[in-house]
Image 1 (cartoon, rainbow, N blue to C red):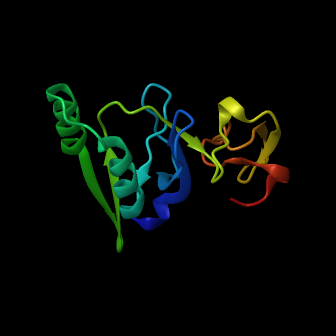
Image 2: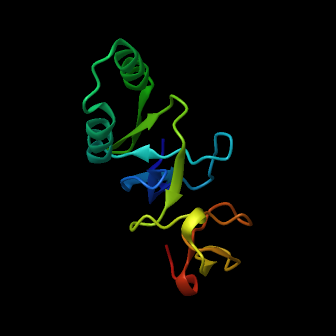
Length: 136
């Protein structure tokens, strides 16, 4: 796959930790939720938090499902990881602002339409709404 088909972004689950990730420029969603591709570091950080303290049989089964859902994707020299398993990811900014907590309006860095800061543009489906329409 071509590195020019993806762009850097951030993701989180609920109001949890923010992870650096990449998204296809032509966004795809699962039931309206983001589908990030995690970096090596973000994957390890996410797994450390997700698997910590898990020891019951149910926990171990969920951990196995999570681990076996990870799929590596190669973009040039960059390896990114997709975690399936029905996780509910939100696209956000580096400080964790996303649609549910972004009261301010921003401008799309691609097509210059307006929407909630830190969310993906619903017009061009490529840009992120940023303050004043700065480039992403």
